[in-house]
Structure formats: C-alpha cells, structure tokens
Amino acid sequence: MTRMQRKAFTLVELLVVVAVIAVLISLLLPAINRFRVQAQSTECLTNQRNLIAAYTQYSIDRNGKVPGTDTGAYSYDWMQTVGGQHNPPGTCCSGYQTNVVNWDQAGDEANPNTEYLTAFTKGSLWDYIGDLDVYSSPQDPRLINDPETYALRSYSFSAFAGKEAYCRFCDSASAADSYSQFRDPSNQLSTLCEADTRGANLNGFLLPKEWVDPDFAPCSESFNWTDEPVVWNPGRWNVSFIDGSVISYQLKMSEETAETHFGVERPNGPYNNIPSGTACEDAAWLGSKLQPKMLRSQ
Image (cartoon, rainbow, N blue to C red; front, side, top):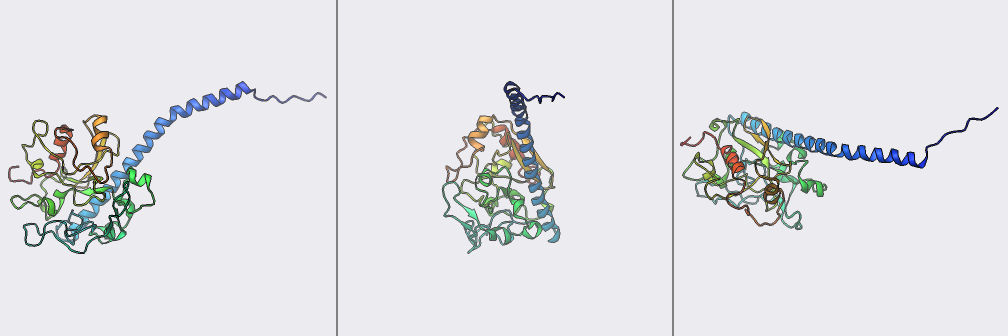
C-alpha cells in the first residue's frame, strides 16, 4: 500500500502569504488609526458633557447660582488649584483666597506643574463628578507620555461661564453669577481643551473682553490671544456649551498653523506667542461663542 506524501508550502508560497498579510495590514492601519482618534475624540467630548452636567446640577441645587470658573479665587470655584493670585480684597472683583496651593510647581521641563488630588476633591463640582478620568482627555499628550501623573487636567471652563475674577471688569457685566444670565446657552462656550503654558490651566479660559464685542473683527484688526485652545483632536477643537451640547469644531486654519501655534504644549512659555491675525476665522468663531446676547450692545 502506497503512503500518500504530505504536501508542504514552498518557501515562495510562504513569502507570498507574508507579503499579502503585510499589504493588508498596511491598508488597515490608517483605518484603525482613524477609528482610534475618533474613539478618543468621542471620549473627550463625553468628559466635557459630564463636566457641564455637573455644572448644571450644581446650579439647580443652588437656585441658579453657577460655580466659579476660576481655579481658587473663590471658595466655590470648580477647581481649587491655587488662590491669592487674582484681585486683592477691596477691588471690584474681590476674587481672592489665601492658603490655596494644591499644586506642585517643582516639576521638570516637560511637566512643570502638577495638580494634587486635593485640587480636584476640594473643587465645587467634585461631588457631582467623583472620577478623575473625567477631567482628562485621552488625547492629551501629557497623559500619553506620562500616564503615571494622573492628576493632570486637560479642560478649562470659559471665564465667561461663571464668576471669574480675571475677566470680571468693573465697567461691564462680563461674567455670569447665575444661570438665568445666559441668554443663548446653546451657543455659549462652556469647556474646551487647554494646555496652559504655565502648566496647570490656571484661571478660567480667558480672552480679552473686546472678543465678546459684536464688532470684533479679528481678520481686519490687530488682536491678541490671552488663552488658546489646543488641537489635540487633529484639525478640530472639542468644546461644550452651557446647555450641555458638545461639538468637534472643524478648524479653518491650515494644518501647519494648527501644529505651530495650537498643536503643541509650551511648558514655561513663551506665553501668548500667537501672532496677531493668525487663525482669524477660527478666532471669530471662538469670539462669537464666549458671551452671546449677554452684553448691552447685543
């Protein structure tokens, strides 16, 4: 009885199979990467939705009073990172606390400032959130590069979304004290991704008060950035609004501009180095979302 010979793959056949698998992987990798970025962006937006939900519940529980959007100027600020650096007692804003230093300024160049857990737990929104992960974007490169530093925060509240000492100018009603002051909550900015060059997103997200003027025209006049959102989500700003809605805003600026001026973290400065006239279309959009219909001129 003749035994049947077992037929094996030849070396050429194996090489062909390997080559086909390699081609398939190379074709799938971009799709996998896009899916990963989209999933991370969705999680980032979900975090911001949770933050504004906590903000809203805080307001409901306090008869319309909104939490402070600074980081320690007031006892009811959403974060208690640092105090005593704003307006001293007796001035029009009176946003001033002493002995509020829940952060470390002795970090290295890549991570100059780290917030302690107490900065979160002593914040007015902690009881409504109770989860550190909500404060951090999965697209934040600081968390990707240093995942052990869990107490980093990726988001800031708009200074115009609550009583914020830095933007509460004496001559204008520039920040809200209560929810009823918001005239267009579906269009008023609440949170966004920010990497403060000082390291800890101190204060609320703040832009000069001329940005909220209906005649603000960044494409035709000189203007400056006080704070700026970061482009961790490629080509987009992830933001939330007072009414709890979230969007991933498609930027009009070029990829080069986004990477040069908005896509990198700049620990320890230089601060506010975005040239006037840069990204003016996106600046106009941002300005229109800071405080819509709240000024007398509107």
